[in-house]
Length: 489
Image (cartoon, rainbow, N blue to C red):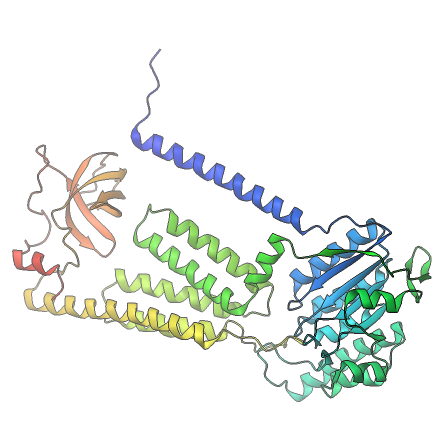
């Protein structure tokens, strides 16, 4: 029987395959463990679950709150306290949360806390939807007028439709919970906002409490109506002296909530494009490509949880595609400049809206403190490419021959992926895309000599038996001065 043998390249590929598989398993394990951390702690009838909701109201916050409410209900908690501090959020997610509160079989107390917190915009709807609403001293509620996702005013016709729809939503909540309709409707139609004391006097909230413990003493003995099997049923709260079970965002939820930020989403998409750019420039590097795809995936997840504009994301990726074209196509730096314009426009438009606005969402956009430096870096890189291209064209016109950008002509390398006629070769410690001019097949491990360079593509031929670098067989020879200059005047 012929023994089975593996080449070094095969072993390397198998090792990489095993590494990818083990890496995938590890990532999956971390994800499962992270999701487990997001599940609320076990509760019982002698406990009160305290849920922290101190973020923008988006699908991540809605899913987290839904899981926490469901777990508290399954464990028979005496009551649920939602500590809220939010600038607003998506109307769709807000309506989902309101529905969860209406359907909760456990009494829900919404508490605007700590001092200095706010239940602005979407937070007003959630607070009013609680069985009991309370605020800490020094907090405020209101300013629930719909605005566009980028903070701009809404046109009159569209404004009337959205305002009426949103006002009807707050009226329905007020009627369901027995709260005053007019003051709450004013938060939508006139962007009214109230301090804790004003909200208490108007009947928007039920209590002002210094702390959660103080709040539980105030509401002890209060009768509320919760959702039961046969409809709403009366329940008397017994909350004084109950143990508190604090529930926080799990690791996975925290990660998703963290990246659901316009600046981080912009950076992730930009880094993703940059990683893929490096992978295209140096095929076989693996890490830049994998890291780029991971960053892009996270960036798209963040964009999907925000009122983002996919046109902006496409423009950012187009910028890196133009950068690749600038390196590989003879030009005058036009592609590079177009890439800079595309990158900046993508950052500006990433959270710009031209259709139906996103009601209740706070003013969000990519900060110019982030976009500015990123644009400068991209501009600098593009300018360097443009200068190199210009100098190369001058040399070509002066000498009548194709310029080179490195000292790779005549360098020796080893084929990493078979050339048939295109593959990859390891030259000067890097992996390059390579091809043979004659179209012949060159196997893995064969020594080759670089005869020509076209951007990231090398033209090679099989090296002589002595392994010495011979004179290139394509194009005119290059003088020592050219090699000393590295091909750039």
